[in-house]
Length: 297
Ligand code: GDP
Image (cartoon, rainbow, N blue to C red; front, side, top):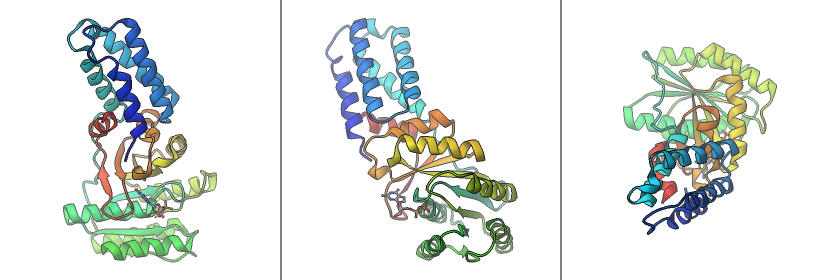
């Protein structure tokens, strides 16, 4: 990840305050205007930017930053804290079932990274907890999708349950869950179909799978590089399925940061993990505070 443009602009906005013993109202106004522009240019959601700027300003004025010592430093601190809050404040751990298996349903648009990310997360659980996951191939519209999941499964040595493309996905999931129960798998990943855009038929199918499987986690996978479209996608999926968590993929290729900074504030749903590359190891827990520090540079 490199939100260089955003980092540079935020740093520049606040640099001007440095060295000033006292900051005037006008200085603060200028700084806030530049922060606002920097965030908008990074493709952060308009309302999120508005709220962010308002809060930082109010805190700066309220805490009498302008009259205190090191005003520049204090404003940097407020911006850091508010960026952290905007992205969810604290880490959001994986929802786990009290009894096995924990069922994780992966949803998202085609190409967002569902299949790859299911593999990454299964691999992570294997390494961290010695887990024994099963992955169910429930995307019956693209034969290549099943092959891809099988390939990922082989790569990380995780079994894949598949029934080809001729069976109803809900039935595949039913049988896959029965298999997981018989084999005592502790995690089940359901790799669902995606489309290029949200459509009613797909949402109905996903809702039927959800109703059958009662997943502990409905993990929405979105491509960070699509910026505000990722945010709109998240709102669309969330309104139909009530997702429980978000995984932001392709952060390695995202130069702006708009999705990372907007999704939590817009949807209220936590970003739980981020994908930062194509390899199975390229999945990290999302830490709002560390991301804020990275953005501030
Ligand atoms: P799906 O259609 O949602 O299942 O998406 P795939 O899992 O097939 O991923 C689509 C493409 O995105 C593949 O080429 C993946 O290797 C790539 N991809 C997935 N996650 C990441 C990531 O975090 N970073 C990068 N650079 N590529 C990713």
